[in-house]
Length: 219
Image (cartoon, rainbow, N blue to C red; front, side, top):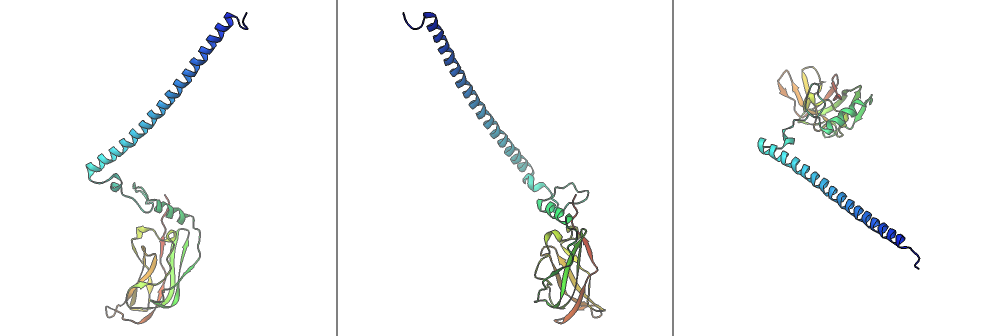
C-alpha cells in the first residue's frame, strides 16, 4: 500500500492546479499593470502633444508666440494686470527688506572728477544721493566707478534717466542724472545761463543733493 491514499493524491492534484491558477492570475495582473502604465505614458504624451499643438495654433493665428503677446512689468505696479518678471519681484522684495543702509560712499571716476565724494543712502524704501565734487565741466561721463546695487535703485517709474538736483554757482547749472541702465550718477556738462552756452574744459565745484526717489514697492 502507498504512502498516500487516492483521496490525498487527488487533493494534492487540486492544490497544485490551484497554485498554477494563482500564478497565472498574478502573471495576468502584472501584464495588466504594465499595460496601464503604458496607457498612462501614452496619455501624458498625448497631453504634451496637445499643449504644443494649441501653442502652435495660437502662434499661427496671431503671428507670434503666446509669450510674445504678454506684456510684463519689471516692477510691481499699482492697478496693473500685467505679470511681473522674476527679476522685478526679487528687486521689490529686496528693497522692502532694506531698513537703512546709512550713507554708502562711492568710488569717484577720476577721469571726470578731480576731487570730492559722492554717497547714496536707502532708508525706508527711499533712495537718496548726495555729494560735493570738483569735476570737469566738459563732456559727458559717469561720476563714479562703482555701481549702485540693483535692489537700491529707484523705481523704473521715474524713467531710464533720472534728473538729480545739483548746483554749481549762481547762473550755472550742471546736468547731473542717474543712469538707470548703468546704475551710476552721470554729468553731461554745465550750462552758463547768462550766455546760454556750455562751459568748456574747466573745473567746477558741483553740489549734489536735495532729491529723493521711491524704490519699487512690493505688491
